[in-house]
Length: 181
Image (cartoon, rainbow, N blue to C red; front, side, top):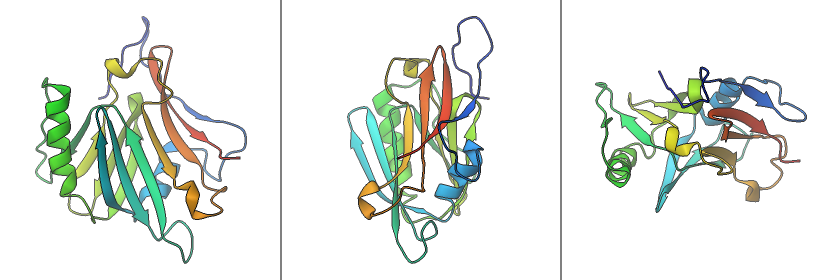
């Protein structure tokens, strides 16, 4: 479903864990663990980069925790009827459509999240909407990352919670866990 340019071979999807791994080394399962039960609390847009801030009361007992999703890749919202503005339109026009649709997702609970082949991220909400990040050939640059999901480190001791990164590696996308320590 999600294709990315590779140097002559089929796209590779790898789940890499660096140093010590959390209980689950499955990147998709860990992403689901971070986001399930959370809700979008805030949206920010800066030129080509978007920032969605989720609020969760399930990650740390007795604490509200912010989870930040920052990305520069194409993003879409698919409504409950399966409608979305996919296609070849200008990046900034697409971003404007995403902002309008994502605004309708504020306060809605995440019921599932999955990392897909090719570095995509699909977030399902309780209203039937899906937020989809789809890295594209234009994201295969030398940036540090294409999208990043991280727990706000300013909220005290969150060392046992890992970050999830999608990075461009040699003509493909790799999604990995990253330790804070």
